Image 1 (cartoon, rainbow, N blue to C red):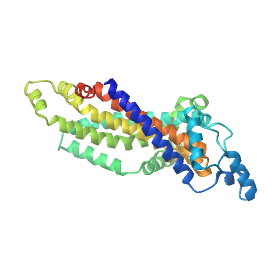
Image 2 (cartoon, helix red, strand yellow):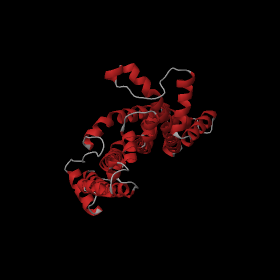
Image 3 (cartoon, rainbow, N blue to C red):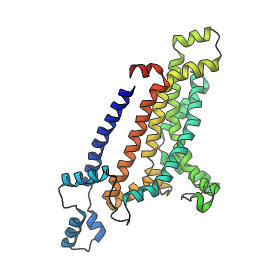
Image 4 (cartoon, one colour):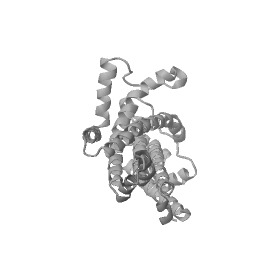
Amino acid sequence: MGKYILKRIAGVIVTLLILSVAIFSITHIMSGDPALAMLGSDASAEQVEALRAEMGLDQPLTAQYISWIKDTISGDLGDSYFRHQTVIQALSERIGPSTELAIISELIAILIGIPLGITAAKRKGGAVDLAASSAAILGMSMPAFLLGLLFILLFSVNMGVLPVSGYVTVAKGGLSNHLSYMVIPCVTMGLVQSALIMRITRSSFAEVMGKDYIKTAKAKGLKERVILYKHVFRNAGATIVTILGQSFGSLIAGVAVLETMFNIPGMGQLIVDSVLKRDYPVIQGAVLFVSILYVLINLVVDISYGFIDPRIRVTRS
């Protein structure tokens, strides 16, 4: 198992290096000039070129990448062109709302998706299974922003019980006021993710419950609860953990639309604003940070397989 973990860590390092090249390249391929954006359209060509030289943008892309990756490895993500702060400071101010949004949304998705998937698997082919599967398909096919708009129309515009958008910290507005701003975006993302979790849980449980050893356990008179959680869950657990890891990773990486729509000052909104302003250091630092989180989540999920199923631990040792 130790060798396997080391191999996975080595693979993560290679993956992150490839991602860094892709992130840097895509950022600099975008149209627009940060120097021109900072000086305005009235600036002369000489002024623009002088600022580009000061920012290091006149150097070849290879030299710019090497300089950026060296600084990044040393813990320096650079300075924002527009925010008068370092990239690390900008990220530290925005990571809190995004993390809270992702964690609460994932908890909602788990509390809805897993029990519903298990119930549907136990009643495979029945009315409950049909209703749950239909709801899951609807949830997977509906864009999160559309569901969010429907919730805004219902709970904010028509009923007036929740704010339309915005964000208030606990320190400034209190816990209840803070949570009122988080309800719609968290429920929106949680419901969308729960649909996928429910489908995978239902499929995994239904497949395992059809195995011969489960039928044998039932024939021996074991209680349904014992069969479900001791035998079925252990064998279906690896698949469920995989989808939970991917779900949480996608929440971290994909909050940009909802954060912008609900005016939540998180990582997603920071990336969107930086793209519009061509703030290269912030774009590169923020996207790389999110990518690192996503890769690390998948690494933890992969390593956890050995603790969920001993057979996997033996084959990977």
